[in-house]
Length: 299
Image (cartoon, rainbow, N blue to C red; front, side):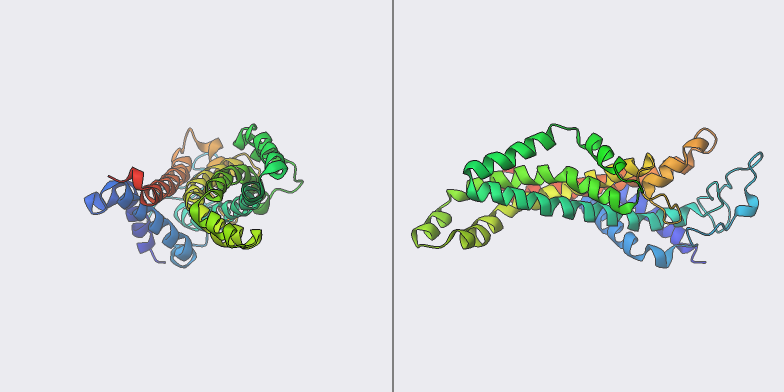
């Protein structure tokens, strides 16, 4: 039953936290370890998971009065949940769901923010004023509160409602950042030279301004990905995510574990630890990219 998968998962978490004990020294090394391990685990999790995360393999051991949650045992190193499903398998497969939600929400916010930021930074004038007033209104609302409000508007919560809610929240962040970069590019030498040569506005924006303004946006996307993972977990924790727990997600597992927290806290500790480690990894990757792209921050 591929019990070695448990060893792989535990080693992955330890290596992510301690950077292989000095082999990956410093924040950049830890970031690479966290990033690579999470991506690899999310891709291969269904192949190496010891059990089907939806199968109640230990349901015969679940007794509400005496043993509501089966503990660790051979073949189930992290035990099972209140429905007899293997916790390790659900954590591993949940990594894929977390990655899908985080990446798609970030891409959605990036595309929306790039559209607004490009319009504001390229044309200026009344277009800039209108776009930035909309962005200011969105930024005036706490991001998590707005995500909750958007997700609660849907009659049937699902993974896609979480993605949409988080993407909308991230749009003004990318829009303001790209707008500032575009305004800086408007007065650069290569843009002024292109205008002097009679190049039209469209090619100037998409060939000269936008490519050179994307550096800070890419860095911000990495940082936003960590925030998106945390926000997605928060929405799922409150029951605004995918209601089908046969497809495990870390925030959903954290929410389902609350009734058993006093007697079996490990059901909440494991998914919480995974969320913290992955968010830390993507944050460190973003900081590493920022230092690489900004010469002033290099030592």
